[in-house]
Length: 456
Image 1 (cartoon, rainbow, N blue to C red):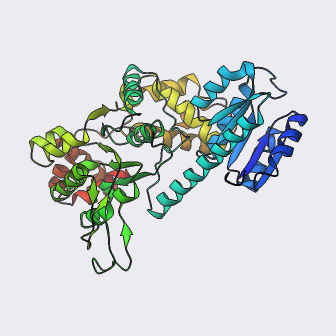
Image 2: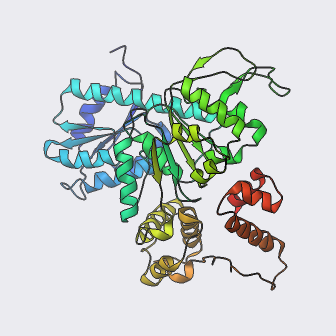
Image 3: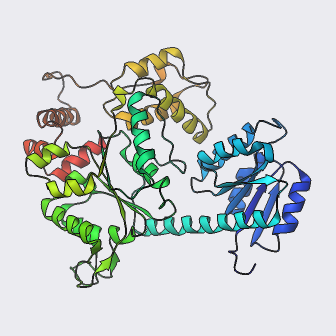
């Protein structure tokens, strides 16, 4: 057993005999083990131990046969630690429930009564997976990978029953297991990064690095160094060598958000790197092979960008082997309510609030709103409502929704922020959503306009 990885194990089972047997078996083989018969103590032991693997029973005293309580505790663990490795302990008759739980994020399951060899093999595989996830997360942190506002469970939570979203999810399931390049299209706030993370989570690269870069938030002069990296002395501030995002993603997935912001000069270099599957850092003549699965996204009309000469057609052909268009929230019908209820559960738990759901009037108000900010706007609206509500169910008055600006000129305010917002909205309408054209109309840089849009 010396070759097995040392790890920390947390066991939750209301059967004292099971706890005793597991403690006796595993204590000599792992770094540390904690056992508890009370799932209410999960948070305490999790904070104390920081386990690599959680062994979780499916049934507890409250509901001894359905497995629902174990499923609830699984979701609780994944909510507090999306990268948790959870192995379920089930009776033989529970395997269907275990498969359901695995689809929601559990790693594996062990049947009772177990074979020690099978249990140990599953446990040590879980420890290895946990360590790989931690290494990938540390690499991402070193690369200063931007966190997503939609980051959730592993795999990410995608909520939607509308026909348009069902088509999106069907495409995701069909292409996730392949290495095909995917281009995700959609308005700001629709959740393009959630789809990207889902594609990664369902792929063979799920345990490898997921490296993202928001090209709309990177100044143009830093694009090349961010993508390809640089050697010490390559430019004035290059005091030490640094790997670029493409190199850091090798073996895993690279997500290029807002790829429509990439200048033509960089489009050429990106295309060459993708075709040759190799990069060179700034200031270096050495070639480094890369193995990435590319996912790109943009809110621009990328096909119009090609027609107008602002985006290379050959690069578009390279990145959109599969094209996925995410519908705006206003076109998703009852998904609005489903998402609102999901965010309510998330924020009620985060802020220790008791909520009895969203009442009928509030639901109608949410359905009538046009959601120009899409899912991101809804998420913030629910968070604000949870914080300001007086308890109980959320009502219509708890939601303060900003109505779209009037299309005509306004003369009843000289508020500078409001005037700037109206100017941006008008420029975006005139430019048909094209950020470069809108920036030209406003007399500012594309980067400055993108930053202002993000702040709205």
